[in-house]
Each structure stands twice: as structure tokens, then as C-alpha cells.
Length: 319
Image (cartoon, rainbow, N blue to C red; front, side, top):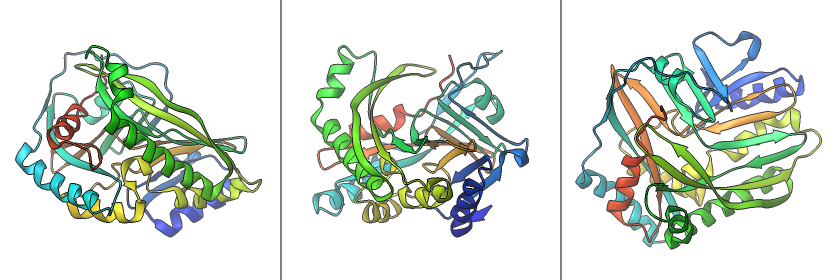
């Protein structure tokens, strides 16, 4: 496991040499892995934009045991007070939810359907729908995802797109990501604003709202891949704005360690980069499976609604 400086330094060196590599960076940029693909061990499995999934050959059980609303309220109130005092405009509050299932982490990795999947040494699995950044032929693109609703609700699409709180939350993150990309690229534009993705889970279908933001990198970007990620992390969509102060609020409010949850993982193929935000995340801790999930809190947020959204995001996309 590498430390911060060596993570980004090695990414720069391998990028300059056009050596394909896998990388993984935790939420606080304290630890990570950078491994040339030719040396990738068998116990690190990942999948990017897989079109097929393996079908579960058995019925599976999945139960969740979230914290109480009363316990969540304490964390929510702390965050909400910071928001009311203007210390943050948007704070992503997350929780750790114990779960039980008859599937192993390896089976969860195999059977879930998601844009991005990672099984790290059977310590944790991630099945993320959210792109972090893609670098293709000198252009960098980011796709922040903010806003979730149960697709079975009548007029769900119109409700989520017309919701004032959700619209404000999404606008804040798009502005933050646009500013982040401006630090490392030129001609930054919002190419597609608030489009809908459909996510099918084990018990329902969700609609999630995303945007696409793009910029032009300098010609020497291959030797600066690590530097680019260092400047962009942590991902704005899973902390909030302003980023530095909001991370301080998160560390004050959350009563557990995110570790690699809400970090990023990805691959450099020798010329292009694809990466994901590590959300939809299950970790094994002392023989107990823990599902980590959360959502963005604004000054207009209602505690019970945010609590329900946090629980709603505890699912496995197996169907």
C-alpha cells in the first residue's frame, strides 16, 4: 500500500512511459495502489463498462440493519448547523450499515451489474454507477451524479428534475467540478446538464441525475496523470463545497472511517484513463459485512428524507 506522495509520483512516471496501470486511491488521499497491469495480482479484480454479468445460480438473501433515525439525527443536526452558518453549501453525509447476505464478496462482485466493479483482495467490493473522470485523446470529462428517486413513483423523472433542493444540490456540485477541472484543463464546458440514468437494483429501480463536464488538457498530460488526480481529489460529488472545509465537517460528523469508500479506482491503458468514484461499497470488517452509503445535505434538506435516501442506497444490483 503506497502513501500519498508516492501514489501520484508513480502515476506520473508510468504515464510518461505509457505503461498501462491500475490505480486505487482512498477518500483522504492517504493510501492507495498503483500497479502495472502486467503485475496485477489475481486477488485484485476489476471491470470497466462490462456489458454482461454472470447470473446468480442461487437465490440470494440480503438484509440491512441501518442506524436508528435518532442516531442519524445527531449527525444530520451537526452538518445542518454548519450549513446554516455558511460553513458549507453542500455536505455529503454517509453512514455504515451492517448487512447480512448468503453471498460472498467474490459472488457479489461476479453477480452485480454496474458500470464499474472492483473486488480488492476479498476485503471490499464496489459496484459503482458513477464515473469520476475519463481522459481521452487530451480531453478530460467528469460526470458528477447527484439526485436519486425511486422510479416506481408516478412521474418520478419530473419530480426529481423539478425538486428545488435536488436542483440546488446538483448545481452546486456541477459548479465545483467545473472549477476543479479548470485547475488542470482549459476551455471547460458543461456539455450535458442533468440527464437521467436508470439503475436496476435487487428490489427496485432507481433514477439518478448526472451531468457531463469537459475540458482540454495540456500536451504533456500523460506525464501529469498523478498530478491531475491529486488536484481533483477528493471527488466533489462525495464531499461537497467548499471542499476543504466540508471535508473537515465530514470528519467531525461521521462516526466511522470511510477508508477507500468514496475514493476512486481506475485504469490507464497506455494512452487513456477511465476511473470511477467508489460508491455502492461493501467492506468486510471483523467478519461483519458493512455497506457504506449516504447523500448530499443542503440547508433545505429534511432529516427523515435524507435518512431514507441513505437506506435506499443500500442495495445490490443483482437481477
